[in-house]
Length: 403
Image (cartoon, rainbow, N blue to C red; front, side, top):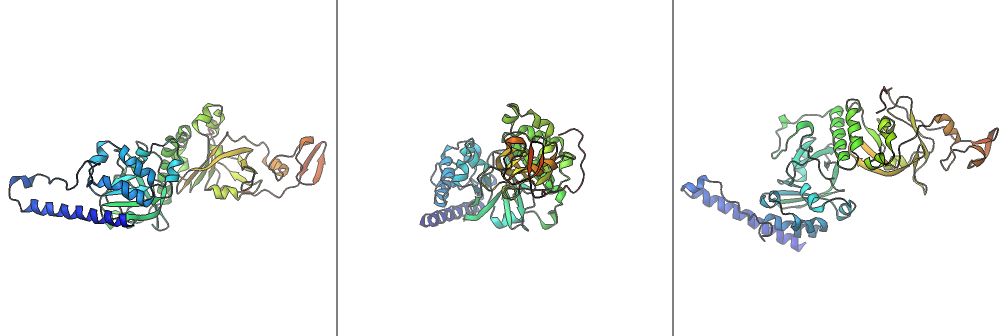
């Protein structure tokens, strides 16, 4: 705490020095006053009085050691030349280490923006405002929820706002990290960065649900593209006009590597892997009982929970195990990863009647009899089961091409 106090005093000294220099320049009548005054802060990031030299001790004191260590690895001019106010959106060490393929120096630059953006100021920004990071042409998107009480940076919530704020450097703690930004991240909806608070008359009074879904869908497509799900990203683009009409959606995804290694069927059945108007996060999936039926964008075709989650046995839908949950999520879209494409169940009702507690179809002499036999048909024995819980789509959707 003492170290943070010393850093605060030191930066106030910098600001006082800047004011003194400005006053001296204003009182000088010579022609040199017509030129832009020199920056009061040294531009060398290793100089003990440069703002960037303060990043490392501040981040270390706040517990962001991985980001602090990456400071000295950044050498590009954009980062070292900036000497003004700076805001750092800091992910925890644990979240950074969970991304084995991430470049920490690049993550650092993509989590730093020019300008002092306090949490209060971020709450005044219009939904979808884009702020350019220290990587030229890469922007983070500011969104909100709960009447602006919750702020998200690139879809990641600020859970520890204003951890440090001395007017020159602002640090916010994030619940995770923003994935590497796309070169198109500044072009979504053709929004530009804001360095000054917009006037109340310039801010829209409300954002329609359609506009939010459109923004969130494009955000998911970009994040998929840079996360190894490029084919799914393209498929969502093909059905973009239809998908933006949904309130929200749950998508079961196959990454590019799995598609190229044998999952080609997924390309022709993407619609069969999308649950419309239902945002089922990992916790929601775990609560679904066996035989729950989920609608899809493919007309007349449904998914079924064949093994429930929340127990020792991994959850399965249509007998396919879920590889990872909540791979990508934002306000309208959640994406879960699969090991293989969902097969089509020929007779969902019959299957529901034959599913036992373990989630496997009981059929023939090899059946797993988890319940007493209630009916016999030749050599087949089916166990009694509760009626399937069915989640029905609110409207019928056309299915012409399978995508």
